[in-house]
Image 1 (cartoon, rainbow, N blue to C red):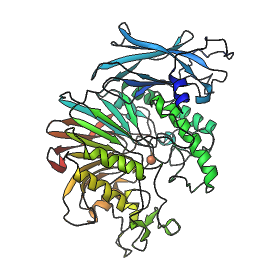
Image 2: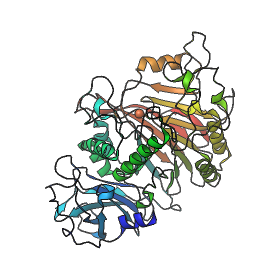
Image 3: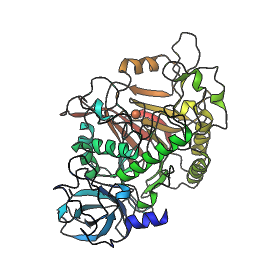
Image 4: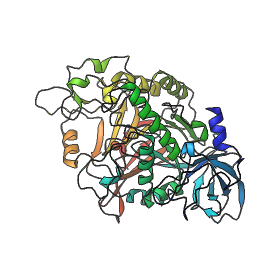
Length: 508
Ligand SMILES: [Fe+2]
């Protein structure tokens, strides 16, 4: 593991062209450039060399040079070097730059044997002790390539942001959906080659590349980066655990190869420690969670109702031993919340945390979706207990997954009527993946069983932003006019405020 990451980040020992006989195409950077994991003193840079067309490059290692500068024309370079793009990692490159100044933009570029990549812009985070007036983040998720265009990313690229949080379903492992506007190559992804090709297809979209080239990203994953509805070592599509773990290892490696992760996060077989903490001056501390890799199996799988739901008969759902984050990550989060010291806490995670009773009113009783936090209520209560116990009183939970927009008041004990609100939740809709109609969402709200859900909106696509300031946070839901058209405008559908010291959703 150590040696592997050293190899990725080490200065090149091979002369270009000596080992690699394969000719480079005119543009070996068709997947673009990206940056991520902004720190006060550094940033992680990413690219991947490709062969002609969508093919892998093949051949041996290549030496890639990088440069990072204080201006967009790269006339004031302040860091640079070379790294080996190793075929064992699909000729991807992960560079961890250190020694930078806090809270300022930088521009970067790669070159290989005289061919240059596009220029990317990035930004370091403000130092923990720095007094910051405003931190602005975007959050987005769920970009099924076939179901729509990525115009949301085009507009997101033009935003002024400190970072983009991507909270899962960056790729989809299979073809599905209505009114497809373009198609995946190949079937369901299983092998490393399948996953690599799928990421290359997604990153062939210029709007997605633009969003990466404009902002540093902090990412987590959900199920579709591996397999639909998987939990830990179990997949409903591949029930042999050994075979599934080989698939998971391939998927995790391809994820690493295509995301701007620090080199130190290279996977070890089917394990990749993705949960991470990020500080933005004195204003925001972000805890980014991974609720897939370590979670307990779904409750009562064999007796799910329509829409993967569980009724009152499933008592397994309530078992306190059930976990969403796994023991180690849960302890890491609890400890991090206990010593939190920024003005605001942000928790980035995959899905809707607030309870959503889907009872249709036909007498089946309280009904919950098995794959979300509602399938793991004891784990949710422990998490919210840690939020309530934190010295930081103002927490925003940011999520995705449900392909619709939601805003919710989160109580410390969501199962108890009148329990105090301890956090405020905003869930972003999908970039492109199809979701419930707005009629369906409004029916769920109108049923009256979910009063803590203060807003919902279905049938729309886009991204969301949150601006943290000293005394308030402002959230905006930004909707594209038509996801099925490659040219679409964006408009703010709804704005919310959270006042410091008063958790809960307010209209802005
Ligand atoms: Fe999704």
